[in-house]
Amino acid sequence: MILVTGGAGYIGAITAQKLLDRGEDVLVYDNLSRGHRNAVPGAATFVEGDIGDREQLQAVFREYRVRGIMHFAAFALVNESMSDSGLYFRNNLAAPLVLLDEAHAAGVERFVFSSTCAVFGDRNPSPIAETAPKHPINPYGESKLAFERALHWHHEIHGMGYFALRYFNASGATPERGERHDPETHLIPLVLEVAAGERDAIQVFGDDYPTPDGTCVRDYIHVEDLADAHIAALEAKKELSGCYNLGTGRGHSVREVIDTARRVTGREIPEVASPRRAGDPPELVADPTLIQSKLGWRPRHDLESAIRSAWQFKLNS
Image 1: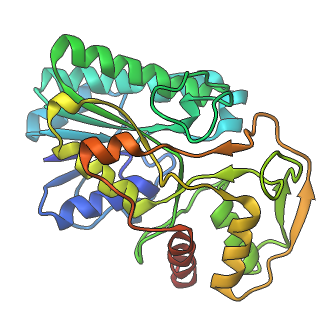
Image 2 (image 1 turned 90 degrees about the vertical axis):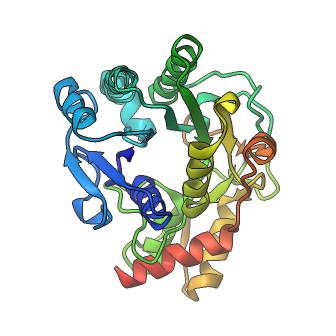
């Protein structure tokens, strides 16, 4: 049995389905505070619960033989973390420490953690390797980095295999599942809302960055590639435990995303120039060399594929 926390969310639900397609038994554990019950694959066992609820976790581990955990249950809104840091440290650090304790007590062999490039902050050159300095600039990134460190020491002391996957900009969809955040903050779904006539225009925050067209550059990775990387980590040798950057290694500017969406959708997508947002680095691109060489993972999708799949999901929803 594979326990997928946050499996009612965007990336967790898609990964849970991929696990089921491989013949795995899957238990989705989610409190539905930000996920959707109808996103949970029908063939998965579902338990509504909080990862900080020790008694409920103990009951789950007594009832099911869990060999691995994929932990997606986290809050991930940077602005929210800046206004309520306590919420983020409780949900992204304190609660998963309870999960980690109970997983160890139950003899779980593998822990795959959904981490983030926000652990690096905004001081690093691009592309970013795993060895780059870690200087989070918000409680969201700090809470994720703190749990990475907890996993490292748990591995050192108790021997549990762990893989912290620091992904960059998740994007795209499958025919059945895609992004349904409230509020929505990610660029691609916001651009597609404009294409669908749900917004008047897309805001471009800053057009004077030191990048080729003046707009921010990011590494967009398709959600199916993210799911494949989690599965590769689940099956990797324990001695390969550690932190891995997860991206395509290629950056795309905000304007490239908008232009690609125009081409894919065939729609006009008006844009409005807005001031820079505080804390937005000019460029965030992964160096995925380590995960490619150690785990044999490589992305199969590009930006156009991500936007095309997200557009089809939107049209069909």
